[in-house]
Length: 349
Ligand code: 26A
Image 1: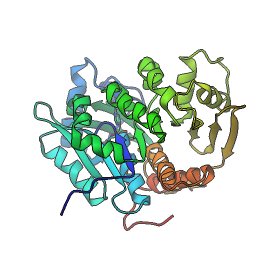
Image 2 (image 1 turned 60 degrees about the vertical axis):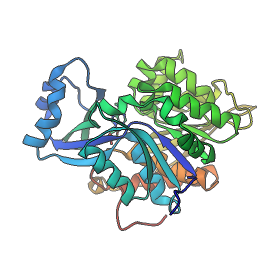
Image 3 (image 1 turned 30 degrees about the vertical axis):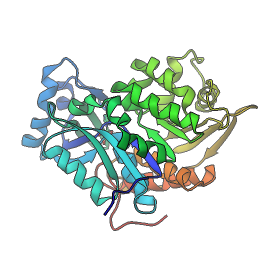
């Protein structure tokens, strides 16, 4: 059978294997982290021991992760078969096989660059009550290269996609690949979507974010990420979330044929949508679907799931209110699963 030559939605980011185990505050401190942190392994060699420690001493589960890979699986969950393509870099090892298998089972086509010199990236997740503290060793995921995207067989998949989503975490890895998608989207008037991913992206990767933001048609983030962006971009200190969303919608835009739409989730508080364009930015608020606290199993990946449902709506040309509701619906399902997962057998929206 000839390979499929087009997928509606293309997602790019860091394929990671999540290694999730239960710990306590002392363990978090031992690895040089604070509760609810999402960090990259730094020069602290102790952090490299976290993964084996989780597996050997904390009954850890191995789950497919990586923010935008979770989003790709989630969008595919809601879309017709063969709608989603995911790109990133993995190692030549059994961890990569776990990721391939999860994507295959869930109908996501992957085009991984395989780097033989580095192991597949891992995200150590320390679970304490409802909190998740995450420490990522990007390893092979950090080896994504623009040349992979530019190979003729991959670039033709890029050209035939209709919607692009880059997880903000990729700005730590290969901004030129994000920019290649962003500029292609602007040139062809196709929607380019970006996630803020974590507070440290607008804080420490501010310049990379500033480069891609003018090309961004849909921007996703949560209230903390939005606040961190505001703090680092001269927005007044007491600005409300709608005011910050407005400021983000007002950042210069390259493709003038589409307004920028900024979507900020706030946990159980309403989702804020700011729509830019030629006139005054408009603000809408959408209450979230209620969920009983005792039904929440794990908040890991709820934001990825929200973006996934929303993107499924964009692919199907749904109006904004439907996109938001699809995002909220999928986030609610994901909250009831362990890790960044979706229930099977499938529920229908
Ligand atoms: C560059 N970093 C730090 C990361 C990540 C990441 N995905 C890509 N890059 N750090 C954590 N994650 C993923 O976030 C998901 C929850 O939203 C984890 O793999 C987890 O599945």
